Image (cartoon, rainbow, N blue to C red; front, side, top):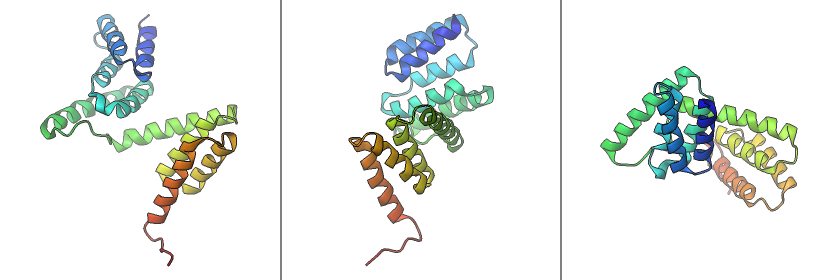
Length: 179
């Protein structure tokens, strides 16, 4: 019962039903007040809405995190909230490089599995292209973005991503500008 309730609350959060998700997490905490994952998820759901995309990344990570990672995230979030209150700048979009790296790897692995299962999954190819661009692997990024466009020639986000990739590559240190 508890696990189903927690899964439903996480699903609600990721779909943008924040109020429903909070109620679900509160119900989980009533059933198991010491459950760290439920506490972490409730904390994430309670973050300011201007950090919603960042919060969704945190929530996805929390759903697969082990006990030590959950402790680290709880500590980070509470420290971040204190820094936010002090600086009044809103929620940071770059939380911990270690956590971001782990999330990126897990998402990348999931997406690679998805395109093996369904080679016609243009969105997965698009997001793999974005991840590889972010990692600095421009060649692999271009391959995935091209596959996305071959599957769906109207995928404008892939075109925009290629433009971003070209701009980043041209600005890369050590690149000579052509005259």
